[in-house]
Image: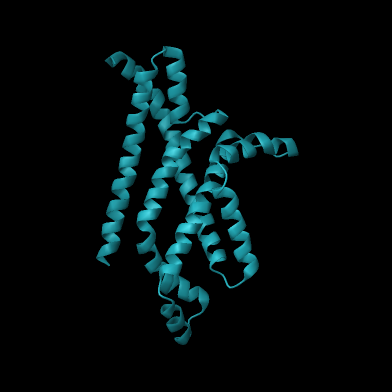
Length: 215
């Protein structure tokens, strides 16, 4: 691997890494929102909401993410719904992330002692107040390691959207490799970028866990 090739490749891969970061951030935001709603549905006393959330997680966790992306990007246009690659990628990744976040958050909520629900009810707190002030703060501490792992996984899984022509880090490396015929060097460089991003996420969550543990 010579320096000239690295100088040529790094700017292109950096542009791809920026798109990957955008995908990751948007997916984490929307996926977390979906996960919170799904977890509240699954822990709800209303069976209809429970069934909806259970069906959603069953479908998404039981099918490959690649298939979900293809259905959204290539399948939906057949019924008149078209979207750009970026939109389709964020939608597919968020729906997939949301299913796993639903189970992570549900597990965290259910791990909190039931006596705290009863104590909150005795104190006159509503369900919403109980969740916001009593259950959720404890749930966050419980689920942080699992959430961190999910976020790191999503960062790497963004590479799948290269299959729908979205030029993120993986797609950028494929373009360089095919034009330069230097696959090994190109993919090793891409690996360095992925390692850098996942390392930052790992350190960030380690700091958050330490901060939360203080309280």
